[in-house]
Image (cartoon, rainbow, N blue to C red; front, top):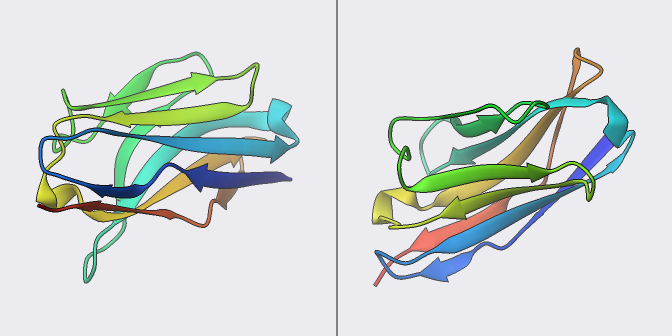
Length: 116
């Protein structure tokens, strides 16, 4: 099994930056794709960014050019660098991993609030 723990959320002003981290433990060698999702109050959870085991990435249109996903396989970490933050980025951000190609696991979430 794989366990995920997020960190790095907080309160930031519009235009500011934050970096989220996701620490993976367990059978980390089995991890394939890792993703960041977010869920704003009253809205469905949405995919923000994804990174495969070979490092290829993709982003939602709403964050493209502002957010960067990265992964350190040797240290079992995934990151989301968020720049030029907007109030509409306010949400709980979740780390997600697919492992052994068929299984999926989630972190507990970290709150990001963008407000002046």
